[in-house]
Every structure is written in C-alpha cells, then in structure tokens.
Length: 544
Image (tube, rainbow, N blue to C red; front, side, top):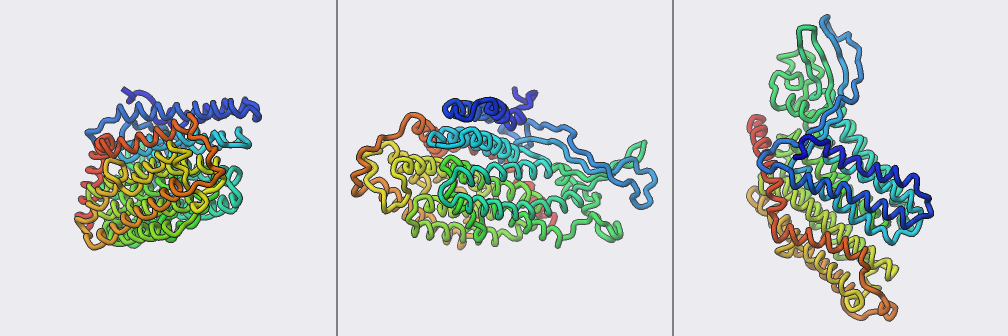
C-alpha cells in the first residue's frame, strides 16, 4: 500500500514542519510550544506504525526504496591512456530504504522521541530553542537508520551531534557544559575515523567503470549496494583485481586494508555504542543531561553505534569480523561485567542506569560475536528492548528528581507509599532490565547467550555472570528508592500526572508486548537476519 509513497522521506522530514511552525510562535508561549512539539512527534510515530504494519516480512530485501540523483562532482578526465573516457565523477545519491534491521529501530526512534517530548513537561527555560533542536535531532536519527549511501549516512550521523551538543550544554544540570564538550570531543573523534574509513571505501570499493556505445564512464559511488556488489558479487571489479591482473591497481583492497577498515569502523562505532574503554563520555551525558534528552541518548543514539557496526563493520567486512569474533565476544563480556560491577558501587541512580547501559550493550556484542542467526536476532532484540527499558527508567528518574531534587539513592526511600504508580512502573522496568521472563529483556538476553553458547561456551558462561550482577544492582537500587524509611518531606508528594503517566504506560506496554509476544519483532527481523547469516557464511566460505 505504501510502496508508491515517499514514506521514508515523510517520516524523516515531518519534524521539519513542526520546526517551521515553532519559528512563528512567540518564545514566551511555553504551553503552545510544548503542544506543537508533542503533536509533531506523533506524526512520524503514526507513519512509522503504518510502515511497520505494511512491511513485507517474507523477504530479506530492502523495501520502500527512494533514490534521487543528488550530488555529482566532475573529475579530471585525463585518466591514463583511455581516450574514450566520456565522464569521470563522484556520485552521492539520496538513497533511503529499510529492512528488518532498520525498520524496528525507526519505530523505536519515533516512539521514544514522542515519549521524550511528553517528558519535557518539566522544562523550565528557553522552550522554543529546545524544541527546535529536539526536532532537528529526530530528523538526523531517522536518516541514520534509513540512509543507503555512505555520504548521506555520515551527513545524518553528524546532524545528530549538533542538536545533542546544545541540548546537553544548555538544558542540562550543573556540569552540563563539561558533559557537552566531552560528548562532542569523543563523538567528533569517532566521526573523523568513520569519515576516513568511508572515504577509503568509496575510493576503492566504490569505483565503477561503465562502458557504452558513446564511451566509458568512471565514477566513485557512495551507494552501499554498489560497494557491496563490487566487493562480493563482481570478481572482475577493480577492488578485487590483484597486481597480477592489473599492475599498480590503485583501487585494489588488500587484506591488510580490509583489516584496517574493519578496526577503524569498530572504533568509530564502538565510541558511540559505547565499548569499553570509550565509555566515559557517556557517563557524563547520562548524569548531566535533561531526562528527556537522556531518554533519547540512551534509548536511541547508543543504538546508532551498534547499527553502524552491523551495517558497515560486519556486513561489508564479514571475513574480518568473523575471524575477530572471539575479540568481539571478549569485549562484550568486559562491557557486561565492568558495567554491572560498577553499577553496583554507584550511589547516584542515574549512574546506576548509565553503567547498566554499558553492561547491556555488551550483550549486543555477544550476539554479534556468535555469527549465527540466533545470536544476531538476540543482538537486534537487545537493541530494541534496551531502548525501551532505558527510556522508561530515565523517564521515571526525571519524575523522581522533579519531586525530590535528588537522585542519590541514600537520600531516597519509602517512595512507594507516596508514589505507588511511579514506583510500580519503576519495578517493572527493573524486572525487564534484569531479564525477568515475559518481559522484553528476557528474550533478548536468552537469544544472545544461546547464539554465542553454540560457538564459545566458555565465554558465554562467564558472560552470564552479568545477569546475576544485574539482578543485584537493579534490586538494590529499586528497593532503596521504593521502600524503607521515608523522609518527612516526601509525604506530600503527588503521584504521576496524566502527562507523565501516558509515556510510562506506553513504554511499559511495549516492554510487556515484546516479552509476551516476541513474534511481533522476530517475524520482522527473521528473514533479514537469515539473509545476513547466509550472506556472511557464503562470503566467509569463499574468503577462507
């Protein structure tokens, strides 16, 4: 039904309409600004819901593809002795599409952003600027998960950095500027490494020659499809032509170069994920940013790192990724145990959740390191599940802070009697985080560990210790907040208002839905993951 619509562009750029309306609203009209922003985020949520319902689940191909000629940079035609050269250029097209990997992340982005917009009810200053940056951030996030051109992906990826920098630095807490600067520094370094890797890929695997009656055309393409075709499906492409075939071939990608590119992408996206030891910037963001901003950061932006690692690191360099599977698994275990142990030592509830995110992202690495269909499904499940859980938990933390003016666990206590609804949802989020059956966290952890156990049982057993540690720090934090002696000042607190309860209920409902009926996600990702697995195994077999 939606094949004839530019549905992906409609989802991506619909927040711009909200920005346009916001520009004409006086900055002191806080309630009107909030209403426009919230309604605007509901538009892509509705559209992405329609897209999810219309998605064909029986194929692993990219769907709803939109492609427009965008940027073409002419180059000097004096190339060797080719006199019939008709044109020579760089080509970057506006290409968007989704599959079973990107579609759930698109819906997650729309859902968490809409819920985060509702959470801005506590915002107290500069509403107009906040919502403009907020909606601009949403545009970038949608684009990252839909882009099928390396330059377009990089553009969207960078588009998320600028709004986040201002959202953290202006509307955060006491040390917000330091947190914003650290965010920009680390992510800027990651982006620089990613850009260098992309440039090398475009100038080697992206090089294509077309011959026709009128002459020969050379061009460098940023298209992921063209690059994958040249790397794996066309043995006569320049990127595969050794010195015996084409002497002094400048486009040949040697094994050394492939390993270098794989590690560059691992570092670039590992900073975003984050992988230990590139995690310190994330702790500051989670501690200092406004709760609605942290909901997006933890719920979506961290997933951009995992998505980029899968889409470009693993699928473009499957031989290298498969050979380094043990390294990925070890990094995953380090993330799991390091995050869990340090989460147990924290007294600030925000830092408990921040270290919990590090630990849970380690489970994604374990699923990827399995290099089988079960593990990959587990990794994707974990991305969606943690996105929902972390967004819910930081939403609750924001509501608690507005009432108590603290997130120090030792200063909280007994809140279940004053705030039974909020503490009840907090308990549900905590149970999902520790992997209780019939909640989303259980299925994601189960699939990831099962997938890895098939290939690395010893590492899997060590990794499962993180589940035990998670139960300890989650229960410790929640029980201290909800029960025990309650300070006298807390007795007058009122439970969640409707505008706070709605996003809590919505996120909790999806957490329960994925736990009770995981097929709502597994059916969407199954054929895509199966295609990924067959693709990787076939390339690895040829490469071996």
